[in-house]
Structure formats: structure tokens, C-alpha cells
Image (tube, rainbow, N blue to C red; front, side, top):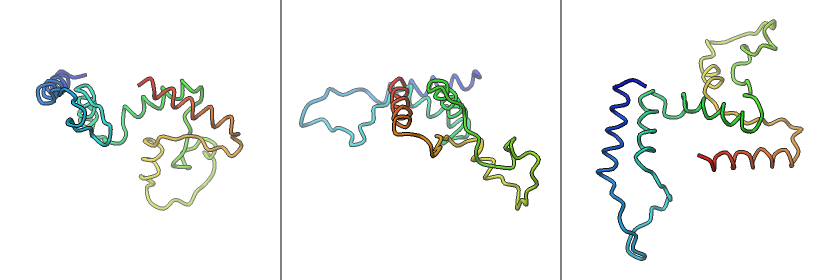
Length: 138
């Protein structure tokens, strides 16, 4: 992390602390956010950190999440998006229209869960339970 980025994130945490003092909860008086959001200075700093990369929906945090989840569940990342880049099709000639930039973007930045048609209910339950367990840790 660069010194400038560390300074920015430190300032964001300080700003949050100064501007978001926790109020005493008084039943029937204190409002409760309908979204149930519970954020702190570290959460806001993470949002700013991602913004500084220029990616609000994907980027280094998505890549880390995908790797960590795949290791936790015991699977591998799935290749999808631009079929012309799949190793199994390396010797196949394609009729390509355009530069396939959107296909490449999907290939690099999407979060994929496998949809193999032979998955049983027990297998799907395992994946769902594993994701819930994993998300509960973060």
C-alpha cells in the first residue's frame, strides 16, 4: 500500500469516527435503519480503498474473495466468458465479430458458481451451506 493511500484511508477512518458517534438506543425513540446496515470506519475505508482502484463492482477484492471461497469449498475457478480463450478450443477456428471486449471483461471479472446439470440436491446443499459458513466468517 502506498503512503498516500494509507493516509487517505486513515483520514477516512478518522472522519467516520468524528462524524458517526454512536447514540444511546432508546426503545420507541431511536430510529433503526430499515436496511439493518451496520458499518464502521473500517467498512467505509474498504469502500474508499476499492474506489481508489477504479472498480466499484469487481477488482482485487473480488479476485481475493473468489480464490479464498474456492479454496474453502474445495473447488477451482470456472473458465467462462470468451470461449475463444478456452484451452480446449485453442485449435478451433472461429468467426469472430468485433474485439470481444465484453466477453473478456466477463471472463476476468465475473463471479461464477458452477451450474453442472448433474448436481444433486445434496451437492447443492453443500455448496449453499459452505457459502453461508464462509460468509459468516467475514
